[in-house]
Length: 147
Image (tube, rainbow, N blue to C red):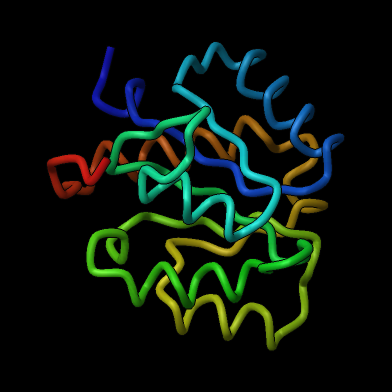
């Protein structure tokens, strides 16, 4: 078991079908990382800050973030995350239906590790995870937990 296999994953996604597909994809590939789900940005921030009474997550965590969500969208979440001294170093991959240039630009301005369009993943879910696993086998993560 590698360090990646124990890395908690936070999926910030309001579409239940996409959440189910994400879980199924992980199961199909034998990924057993702890997975937490938040339906919108504010709830995700509460979870990361240890302010959620029903769920916890240890840091560092790998975050997959959708853009189009109610209350606090992905861009709002990223802005808040990057302003937070304890959370700003979280690794975030944007996983969204939007392929608008402005969304891509705004995401990279807030230091996402990658921008992935859902429809481009489709049958390539395994390639996505191979890329993410390779990323974490090469990079050094900050240690410690904020929660």
